[in-house]
Image (tube, rainbow, N blue to C red; front, side):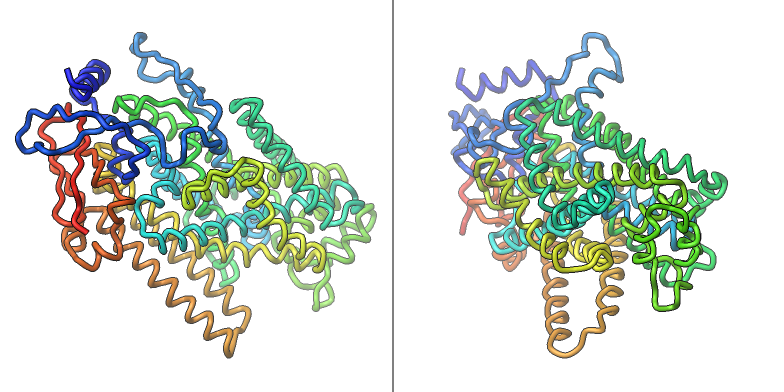
Length: 624
């Protein structure tokens, strides 16, 4: 018996007639690097497969197996086997899969989101709660696709981009995602610094809080050596702190529950002006973060899933979706708490209204310098994280202010850690870096810390907190660079096999992505118009806008080719400039075991399989 026949026999014993190796799907998706495979002799009995080389696949990525990958390098969580009990749903398995979704959900609870929540409550009361609800639902749909990519292929989104895009677009994607991570990190570090400023009663200045963030982020990140589950427990604890602190503020403020329900489920905003519309757009931009798709697709690799068995892969997709749904529901409730508190207390209030409440409070002097405007205090409150804390302290007592600070601190700490993980995954995948963990953490953290430290040192509190809208606009621009690749790869049969997106999934995901991207671009345009840019700077902005749109068009063409558009796949221009080359694509190792008659789309190469039992990996020489 040849080695290939022995491998086929083992696979048929474990997975039956549908036994296709999902690890092979990763190869089909474009691993295409010889050092990730073990060659085996061909035992094919089909005459059409003569002269074809077969390989036995493993789960190794292009990174060396010995390299220290972030988060899950030292251990994987084992999944209990409950098949003998014939139970359709197992809480033991759900518990084993619980973790990645909650870490992902932290991005929905970062200080940037919290500030958008309180601003939307102060500006529109409960009228745009439905926007927050549906933005969270849209986020769940995109996170589901990202998680499926990681589960089915064994590769996260950045690793797949490394294999599926040419060098130049790959570098552009990496730069754009790094910009998104830096923008998010700046929000998180600013939020943490403000929380420390509040909790220390101004003893620790803002720049000092930024420096503290560097130290404690390193400390927490190195906790993963004590065990993966302990690290996940730490994140769960921080989420619990946010739920308790913001929940306390919600109970104390006691908003009208009927109005909250109406704002959540009635998709309308009567009497809303352009400022409220902009606030609604800002919620979408703050909730759906591009680097979070890269993060989630990598986190799911921490579970030990037997990708030789499609049933196990399907089961993992099912439990990860349940876990992500629960995690995002929790994040939505926490965001709802923040909106409700400030909708009830700040909506329609002027700066003078707050100062009147603060007269007999210890934070009155701080309030006098914060709640000011050019209209003698008669303008509506321009809410931010710091003013939110002062308002709570003036209205409900100093305890409420300190509890608010604890919640913001938990949000900032958890978000900075997950943001650093996203940066590590991005560097590992896009650049194929194999750095020691401490060096990756140092670089990704310093990239975000340096500009944030300068802002904290040389600007006022008002300037620092007003950076939130600008940073949201910056991250909104990067959304296509995560959404389009995610849809492209999960809609490609050669990558996902039988787990490829169906027609309905493709249509819904594309339409939703178009809507979200259009909304975010509107938000960016409004932000740019507020700066009244003219002259040479305006010309640079226009040039950047043109290049930005052209690169998005490039990604859309690649996506259409991945989805099987024959006209694009057969185009010489697309083959030369868009589709991956032999070295980065998996033509040499294209496993088409999940689907018969899969056209791979480079040249005239087509891999055909006669039965779902075949687990051969076909190698063909691709004409250059």
